[in-house]
Image (cartoon, rainbow, N blue to C red; front, side):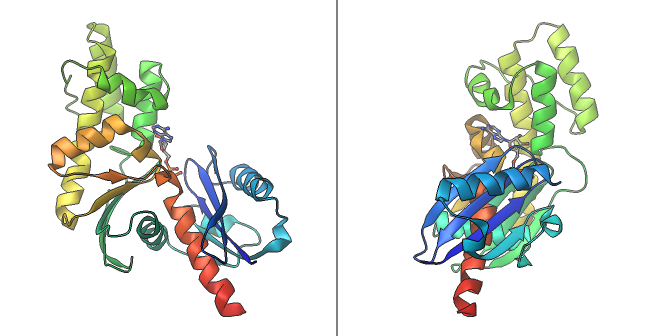
Length: 261
Ligand code: ADP
């Protein structure tokens, strides 16, 4: 049996996947530390430990993500766009549009039936609508980012956030809190503001069914629902959505393993 490793070193989190030559996932790990050395090191140790392997048993390592050029011992690097396209196609065959929201960017991709990238659009440098925007808003509300989904489910109204800029939106949230607007309704407003921003990118790229969402922010079901309402289409999310990039990298690594032998 041969093993290939894919590692996605993001701005916020590091994800790692070990793939077997039979095309199965042997182990995976998600560590909430992104680019740098600590996150990748921890993710590597964790994934190898879960698979019961040593690093020298890995035949090929492909790195992707924002910090992909910083990983020592990687055999090659691939773009996040190609890896997400490949990973999502593996998890959800038949996908033609991918919305990937990570810690610092939003990407919308059109892919073909073989998981190849056809077109993409990205947000500008601004953090609005990204995971970082949601992390900041959660901190202002004194809740965990993982609580946002449940809170938005309990909203009875949407407290609209008009500013897209993170700094202005933060002030708006603070001012809403001071006027005793329910936190649940504020969270619904935050989700709606992200949904509007993502929908405009989705329209620019072109909506082609089936639509899937990848990246850590896809774990927020309340946000996915707000996005479905705003875009007027069904968005599919796989439970391993945050691993999509690392999985795509592992699939590329396995192709190289096979070529090498
Ligand atoms: P990157 O690759 O840029 O590091 P990820 O795709 O790993 O980003 O996503 C990280 C973001 O996902 C975080 O900023 C956080 O907002 C969000 N996130 C992670 N886990 C959850 C969760 N369980 N519920 C809601 N949001 C989450």
